[in-house]
Each structure stands twice: as C-alpha cells, then as structure tokens.
Image 1 (cartoon, rainbow, N blue to C red):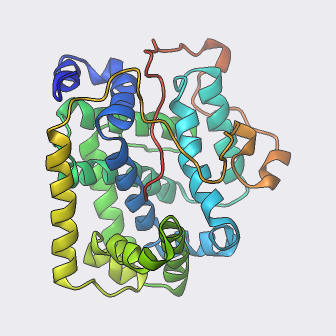
Image 2: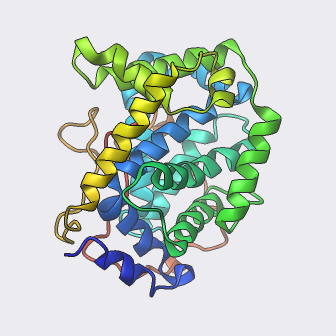
Length: 313
C-alpha cells in the first residue's frame, strides 16, 4: 500500500457519516504511536488544573496503581470504539465509564476540558511530530468522536467541531492553569510510570524527554522548570527525523492494525477488568444520550474495526 493511499480515500469521505472509520484509520494505521504520544501528553495537561489534580491526588490511584490507572484510561476509550460506539459493547463501555465517574462530583466544564484535551492533544502532536499533518476530514473526525463520547457520558455543551474544541481547550487553560502541590505530585507519579517502561539507566533521561515537549505554561502549572534549550531542540529534531523515516515507508496494510498493548494485562482484558474494583459494585445508569441501546444503529465496520491506544505516553 502506498504511503498516501489511505489519505486519498479519507479525502473522499464525509466525516459526518464516516468519522468512526476515519478515526480507526488514524489511530490504528496512519498514526498509531503519534496518536498515543499526543493523548499521553494531553493527559498531563489535566494536572495543570488544581481542582482536577486535587481530585486525582485524593484518590491516590496514580500512587497505588499508576500503571493500571493509565492502562484503564486508554483501554476504556478503546473499548468504546472497538466495535462501534453505537454497538451494545460500545454503550456498555460508556456506562462503565460513567459508573466510575459517578462517585465524584465533577463539574461539566472540567469534563468538557478533559474531553477537549483528547481531541486537541493528538491533533497538535501529529501536526508537530507526525509524518504528515492531519487532513481536514481527519481533524473533524477526531472532534466528532469526542462529541459522541461526551454525549454518551451525559456531558452538556460539548463542541461539535474541532475549532470549537480548540477554543474551549485554550480558553479554559488561560483561566484555570495555576500551580498547586497536588499538580506536581500527580504529574511526578505519571512521569515515574512513563520512566518505568525503560531500562533503569535511561529512566531519568526518559522523564526529561517527556518534559522537553511540554510548553512553559503547563510546566509552570506543574511546578517543573523548562528543560535546557539544547535538549528541547535535540528532542524535536529526533522526532522530526523519525517522521521523515516513516514517510519513506509503505502504508500499514489493513490486515496489520496496531492494536493496544497494556502492561497491566499481559494475557488480555475484559471490560470488567477496567477501573477501580469498587466501581463494579455500583449499578450502571442508563446513558443520557436519548438513544436506548436496543434502538442504536451500528455503523458499518471494516476489518479494521479497532481503535487507539497502545503504550506511549
């Protein structure tokens, strides 16, 4: 398959009708690692908001079971889209996610921001470090998947275009970013998770590379100093060199999607494995999107009907 063959197909599609298929191609074929890099970096942005970081710090999930918390976040998203968001499995994953969040009092504006980071973060990372920029169709597909997730979670006021998600994302950060000790504790716990993926001698460097791609407003909110300019330049050039090499390779064949790999579940997982153990004793509420499961239409699925996540963060 030619490197741009799938892009040409995407440019002939209508995101309003085909956003799930386009999303699968982005996350499993065109940019599997870059999508995960962007999502993982976006997770760190949540910690720049004190009231979000304080809640995460209070649960102690990242301190006690950080790798599981990371894997569960990524895999729940995967489960929502793997068989189609309107499938019974996709709706069951959304109900499970709502059951976990239902224990806490979380403002809709915080939910909207966190959702926006999962749309804006991957787009910005791919445009900066991917082997090509996202097309208009791909960009709007990310936004429409985000909107549908928000609807299934019962979040009010979710944007329906990428431009609206980006405005929400940036306006919220300008207003809400501020340093708090909880920000640094949760971010440091997450960086320890990322560093643990590498051999001990390079873990410190891995953490510094993660910090080198973060912008100064976020670093300030997290309580970290910017890395030296030489390291930031070196990291940027390394990622751009990687992108140039990928551009020379053929496209990933349809029969070889890059599926999730979760360190917590080396033998696989089920939906019931995901999330804190206490969540499984809470009864799931019906989805608040106005579409009963038995009436939900299942969009056509291709042989690539799997979604994002894998290992990078």
